[in-house]
Amino acid sequence: MKRRELLSKLARILVIPLFGLALRAGGPAPAGQGVIIDHTCTKLASIPAEWINKAKETLHIAYGCTSHGSQLLFGMTGLSKWKGPLYSWNTGGSSGALELRGYIGDFAGLGIANDLNSTPSGSTSYTAWEKATRAYLATDPGVNVIMWSWCWGANTSFENIDTYLSLMNKIEKDFPNIKFVYMTGRTMAASAYTTDDAACNQRIRKYCKANNKILYDFYDIECYDPDGAYFGDKHVNENCDYDSNGDGARDRNWAIDWQSAHPGEWFPCEAPHTQPLNANMKAYAAWWLWARLAGWDGRTG
Image (cartoon, rainbow, N blue to C red):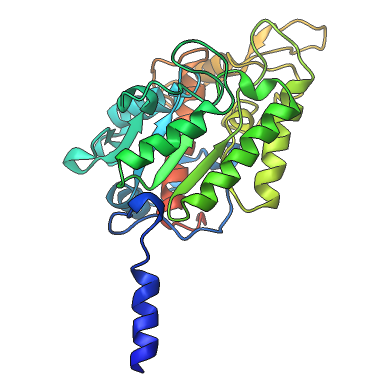
């Protein structure tokens, strides 16, 4: 190889990301590849163990969430107790576990944002998370995956969704060596029927598919049971309640029904605002996401 070509290759390898950030060895898959994690990604047994281990070796994840988003964390904790150390995680990645720092607004003591639509002071903000992300990355150059969840904000207006998408796109460009995971919000609140709910989340989904983004489709997972039965057109809510006969009243719960019919096929866990089975599925989908970010192509069987 000619000297000029060698120097050019080394320069590309040694480029330092903005703010002096540098990925740890064996970082996540290359940018520019779209990944959609939804209800079709909740079959835990389909994820090869080698990619679970690869995720634990290479990913260093920071996750901003409050109670709704914590369903992933409660589910992942319950899963590691149910299935063993293969699915272990902790905030430091010690003892061979996945490094996953939840509640990063508190973890770093920044006090800027709780989730995608709120701050520690209790005020509403659709931009504070972006400021918090930049501040967090400036203090920890080892993180290579960033994810923030919604509380209720994804169920408000297209304007708020577009603000989110615009800020995410900008911060991705500023930190090209970090994987940013987009998220949809929860299904309808237990006390409300709203037409904006599905439409706002669909706006995020369409954008991610059209622009090859990484999406954890929180909303979609809440619309299906493990057998693929669909409840998204039955006024389903975050607690998995739905209207079974079209009379305008939620009178059944798909998660409780499935749990009763499948003893031993799910694990109990704390799950804010929802049922254990929903948190189970959120955990399975989370590990599917981590495996994909570690390089798995998502092909099964």
